[in-house]
Image 1: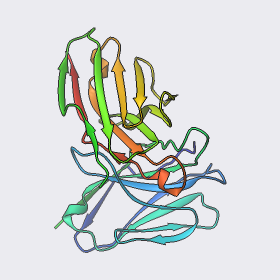
Image 2: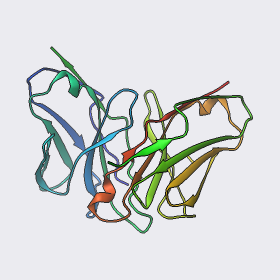
Image 3: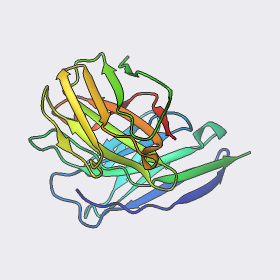
Image 4: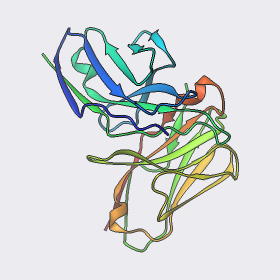
Length: 112
Length: 115
């Protein structure tokens, strides 16, 4: 499974756009990129996934350049409730299903 | 809504005890996972299962075993608990194949303390 590297922490203010970039230099052809969010005392929650270009849902956008060696999670107009740990994962399905490897994540702190 | 439940939120056990952590999901998911989470180390995969009676080792299987006798239930077993197994244990499930298999649903976690 491809290894990912993302910043340990980021700070922001309410109303700002936050971009968290993840590098995955050895991503394989079949790998998808997935992002999760985790609040304190809860399990992680799926946010978004993509393969290439741009994906958008009601929570976030995911930008993936053509070489797919990195990806950027974009959170528009963050609020205090977006304070959480964000995990970037890459992985592919195989005969044994889809196992994702979580790293240490990026701790996002949003202040007023 | 998918629901993943874990048998206990908090558990205190003594060194050397055999410990069972139970996880149940109600969405007929093929895949089930056990992770542990420790400060500064993130989530680490212990074991996962893609079908009944099937299991695969994750990154840190040493000291643990698992059992999946029924599709909805995945048990994590600490054969002889040690203090370095004090941690938060998280169970998750996902569909077997397709893009939806990347979306794992997590339980609330069990905070295990081994004294």
